[in-house]
Image (tube, rainbow, N blue to C red):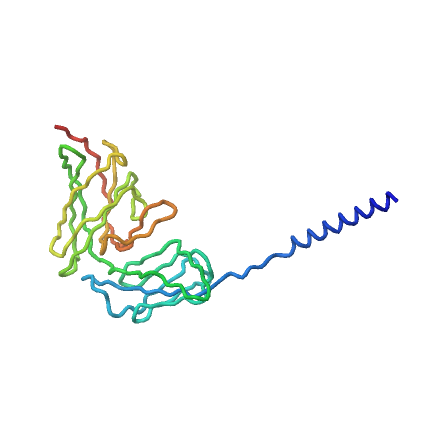
Length: 255
């Protein structure tokens, strides 16, 4: 009798194990929501006037394979259909304009279309920064240097900007830098000059730092690089940088 009970227990245990294995082997399938992403992109010319024709702007879902993209109509509207719920990087691109990116856009999907906030692309500045120099200029209270540039290929009757970057490393770029700021420019100034306020926490007195500058059409638009935390300003012409120059952080003067 004991043997029968023990055998029954073994059979029940064996059945339970088989049932558990079968449940583990059955993969649970989930239906991922998808939906429509709608958006609007505008274009700004060198006079900062919005273009009437906003067609031909590519909107690309970065890293999608096969590539998911849409193209704006004349009004600047676009639609991406059957986009699955997820987190995406969206690239906005049109020849003659600076490329912009939205990083980490969370798309929920569902039966109701999702609207993306307006995106604006700015004209691509083609000014040439022929030379860039730094000279010592220290006041009584802080580290100040004077920078100057020679520029060419300026657009007519227009105002614009130059964005400069500072770094402790020689391989400085618009992506890899320690600090950045903007300088105002105009069609009538071929030798812009400006003051550099040096942050001695990032750049200790006596240390060497590097500088590079790019032409810019606007000063605010950026996205954040998730790897470095740096702001990537997207209204500069990344193909028209100045040469990289270097200087030494001067000693602070006192009274």
